[in-house]
Image (cartoon, rainbow, N blue to C red):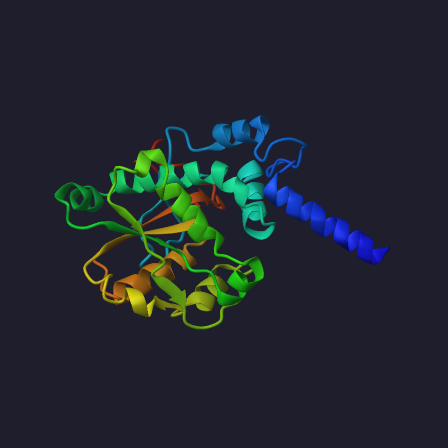
Length: 261
């Protein structure tokens, strides 16, 4: 009976991946992303679109970063389900949010506008790297898949962007979940480097780092440090969501405002 039950669960998981029958946000029967969760995500997104966010305190070297929404409710569940429950179909719901954040970063930083308008080569869109153990466990790199899906969105097709998985982890790191701010920073300090095959491409390049969720800023700070060490000229960040652990008000609304997370 145990073997039959295991086979039944494995078959159900395979069918769910191929033809999702439950919502990846609330678990209700139906499509992969139901109208209720889509509406919830829209209502809780930042008014006026993605905005410039910063951690408080902000780590030295943390790049200016734009996020589409606070981390919570249906978006939180969808991101966890996308990464750790093999629901890659949720990229259809998450990629547009990331694409909006990428557009806001490109429009909000004068250096990016200048690079794109001057035709000074493409902007390298660099996803934060996954650990080798996570790639083996999941069978792929979910953030890279999501980054490619976001860059393929219609709104970004006219931009000179290249998805560049240019970073790798040079040593083992602990899971960031459950670590406090100080331990997160110590866990990642000096942990990333530019991939050998990208070392000739990044010097002087304009890069945009991509992460799914920003918390203390430790991950993007280390990723930016590694890119700068490789000779990158400019680096900023974009994310789907930012956790809001501080009740400090944003300075206005819209893509030019700044929120604390």
